[in-house]
Image (cartoon, rainbow, N blue to C red; front, side, top):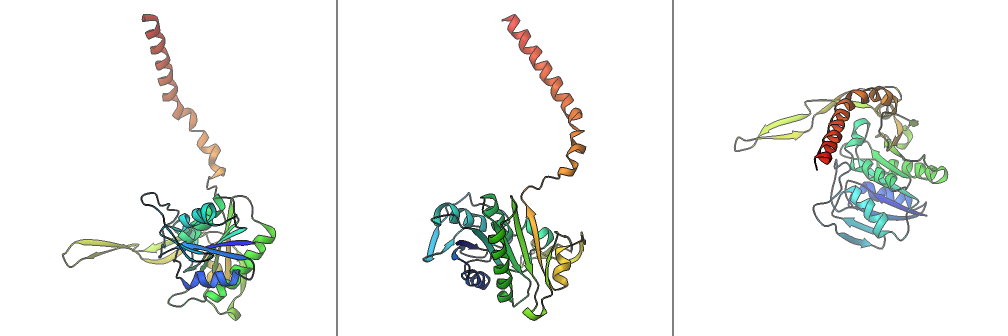
Length: 270
């Protein structure tokens, strides 16, 4: 039973160490992770420079690339056989709602899913200190369940653990993604030369999509597990937009008709 572990906080993060230790009780753990922090790189793939693998131990490698690069290299070049599961984390900080669009942690699990491997992303709430031992406990539980029962096709799990001691955990909830709102998301400052520069920052001030929302579960002390699909097509509105097809095709069909007529005229003259 091979398990691939990766993250976006880098190979030296205590979160990945805690995760690998917990999963070692389940199977043979392979670690392929970025050589430095790659937070918020989303689903970036390195195309503008060569990637290099640095073997740190028999089954541990650092990569000078993104989390998605790590998963690709691990599955296609490093591991002798595909793993039974990919587990990404444990991330420093939660990945709730729209965060999944930016998160390297979630994107690594998404890449595993794209390559046909059941995959899980794990994130831990915290500030200066993180209770990674609690996150690792729940990550191992989810991993065992996924290995036993599998996942639906093109589906990954996004797991978030609240910042509570083990005795303060209220349980687990299956949740939906929230929507977040920020106050002053871009901060403008001046450097010593009087030139403007910017930080993308801000404080989260409100949420929407509250029914079964992941942020509510965390706030109430529950572990949040959100199934995420690769197919982001809004199937419910396809028929609505198909009504646009005749309107948009009018000019195209007229242009094609004129082009055919022009070709026939040219052939007769020749």
